[in-house]
Figure 1 (cartoon, rainbow, N blue to C red):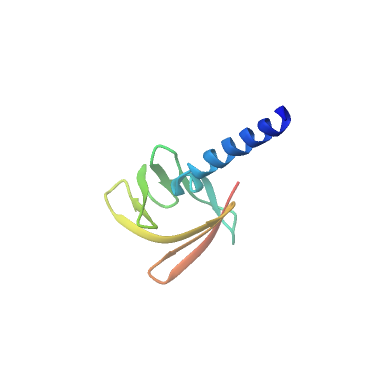
Figure 2 (tube, rainbow, N blue to C red):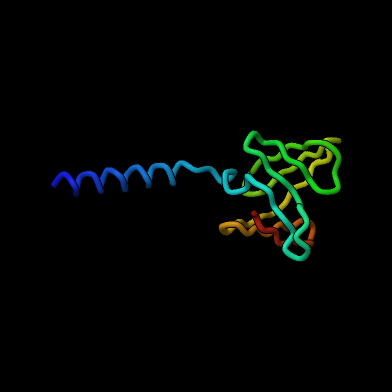
Length: 102
């Protein structure tokens, strides 16, 4: 009986922890272009980011299901995105890229 209670308690904890994760958590990490293995961007858990080809540190957030990036110079980019495990597809203005996380 104690074993069954322990298993139920463990499963409950796992469900609660998984259910509490935010969509932003899936984006944190270093992302590389699939076609050439170059580092595309890094998303940090504090909401900052570094983007290939952009100076300085920007900010990122998820708003209404879209990825919003504000560069160091204040340029705002709004991406459609889809994350599946360690693969992400980004789309903006009809252009898309596939990235992977190491």
